[in-house]
Length: 249
Image (cartoon, rainbow, N blue to C red):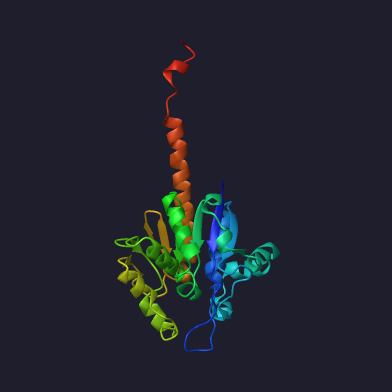
């Protein structure tokens, strides 16, 4: 089985502004094609199902990535994006790992979504990795609510307070994600310079800071899955046959 689940936000409204949010397109497309090119099948899901909203800012020329352009020419991927499965129909047993892209949307819906929170716990309890980037780590807040102490002492990354201020949206969100995660006991590590790529790996959690971190976070998750598969294969090779089955006997 080589299947990755990607959980996308269904939320589009910001606070105190007419501006919209949703999925940051590059934070979906960069990891999506990392997974596809590594041979994984990707399933897309969202709380409401159907086509998730896309943050209009992520479609501006200065924010377009190579994977965005690839997506625009990929009819299969665009169809999958427009027909995401409703989240409450998803079971962790069908997937090797789960990945949460950002965009501001998750700090509203995925941070409080019961299905998402329980799903994250199912993956962790099954020994399966959970990846998230930028505002995607907001989904961990729901998991923490179901299992208090989950984030205490965990080292993660997420969109920083400084970056939130620099993009001019700190007054349009209900809370600052870095601060909220730190309140829950997480050690939030970020790049020394805002908007540079930064990825943290703590056990089964792999988290990235910002849009530039989306691809590297996906690569780190793929590497973890590969190392785990190699370890399992190695264990199998190291096992000695039962002496009772020795053909010399």
